[in-house]
Length: 283
Image 1 (tube, rainbow, N blue to C red):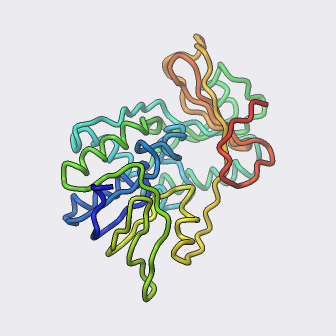
Image 2: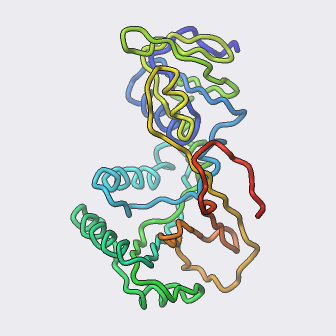
């Protein structure tokens, strides 16, 4: 490919939301030569294009909560920064808890979130049922809710960062697969691709679920294992109402949120094995 340079200060592998954001922020910070490589024909077709779009502050570790505080603010400011909006919908996130152990863990999570300035609400089982009259949750013991959580559009976020990165001089390329990494003295020195070789000062692994095989090319054992989740969208459900939140039935890892006039819902099959299977199981 003629656009593939012989050298780069930084090569970012993976053109989903993390790779696109990384490329943009590197060139914005003054890195002169940034090359982003995506093996698919379009950016954001991997895990980014298959995600449910949820954005939330409700995590159980301090680092994730702090990262969310920063990243959700970035999504709010994306249009002012790049000219393209993230299409954020703050419909709220409601975790429904049906197991006593989960209740105790989420009570600790809420305390941690409060200590970091995140005003998550604790709900009793009855309050969960009152918030979700459209759902049958007779086994709900409690729940957590934050109105500032919700949804963003993954494609819009990727598109915004790719466009802004290109305007600042990054080369963002599709249809280029990484086939190998060259190392010397414990460092990655070059990237072998389907379009040629790039000598690189640094390489960023932003391959998401495929990051372990990429790391393996450099002799690094990365403990990342993807797990297939299947999702679908329903036809219109007129009883939802405008305030219906993003709901997670935590014990089942079942989630559903408003999508058009219906719902998008998804979960993993019982006993699903880790792996790269992306087929649809109609059963």
